Length: 323
Image 1 (cartoon, rainbow, N blue to C red):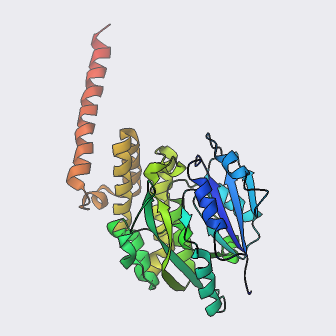
Image 2: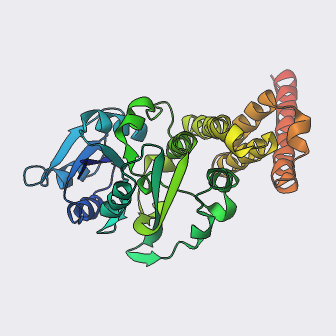
């Protein structure tokens, strides 16, 4: 491979305000051998038409999916793609002009070694103002250390799928899990890091990751399916990397409690559902001995449960005595 084809796969949902800048950032790449595949999945705004005008003049394929799932869209985009490498890009992010070329240049130096995965990084963009991502010190070419930093989420440290230029043969073997919604990208990233023995951090090779407060995305949805997805993803990460990074079970439980807490403050019923699921899976002792927001979160739930019991008792008394 001298200049391998890179396929940029973009799932599209209600991104009419940002998608053109995203596409333009790919078209402006200094690396020329690139195809763009956009999968529109049920947008209710003008996203589809915004992309349509780029189809004829550029190497861009646009198709629609009736299934509202970013994971399904990425799998569909990969199936359409022809690239030797795949870049999964969100519909509101912006690549630096040399972003793809910097990945390829390093891969050329190592003769496209199939055991190496290259990782770029990102800064944040909000209302078109860029702010530096100060978490780059958590990046590590030590796989165990990097997996631990991600699983422990130090200072909300995270990676995005756009950080990786993924070889085609990996994507053929490891598909995105269509049943996942929330944190499906985290699940895929752990698949990548669990597979590749060697990591090369391209620390200065950056793109702009748009803060999701600006856009309506499927990942912001808080419903039962999203709750289950987030809890399952944590367990998937634990299983994928526990032997490499020596994760402790308590950290898995802490991560899942943190998720339940987030859902509880969005929707109390979902919080109770999440807590019931955790108590079914783990013993009460395993959960109660963890100090993570124990007094704030669990005591607040216990307080609500007490009032719920009082309500049921009153309701039962009322039905028996008032005809």
